[in-house]
Image 1 (cartoon, rainbow, N blue to C red):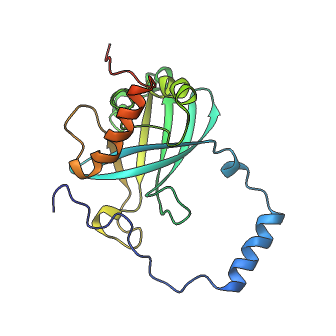
Image 2 (cartoon, rainbow, N blue to C red; image 1 turned 180 degrees about the vertical axis):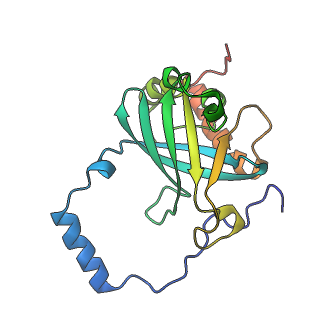
Image 3 (cartoon, rainbow, N blue to C red; image 1 turned 120 degrees about the horizontal axis):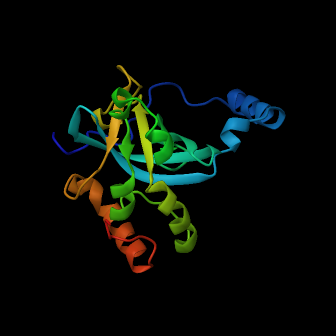
Length: 200
């Protein structure tokens, strides 16, 4: 049904994790290093729609790390807890880097300006002054998003070809059933002076 998720967190087929597997994981976690994952320092919550179908929208929890001041990379999950499904990834670049891209490539990227200023892109649990410092930077960036798992269809495994996703660019695009939580968050942020609704 248009605008309604079939399942936001489908059940994955398979046997429960066995004790032996869990013990092995503990051992390897102690011995090995996880450099790329350890660079993750930030949780951003936003909403994506499919590039070919704006009626299909999903909540996206980004866990991001900087490679330098103008480039960060994010793992995207359908929810923020330890049972989250890895559904995609996003590359985020500064406006300066975006402007160097070929015109044919730019169509796969989206601006974050509206998302930040409208409050639908935010940092859950982060105090206002700290959040505002980074969101002012994020508002001036561009992202390229690929989703591998179509959880909005109820797929219990990542099926089909990867999908290019896009972001909200104006009021009224986000489905009401998804908008409730971010609208409440945006109100809190606005009252705390974290974000501005001035589009200038």
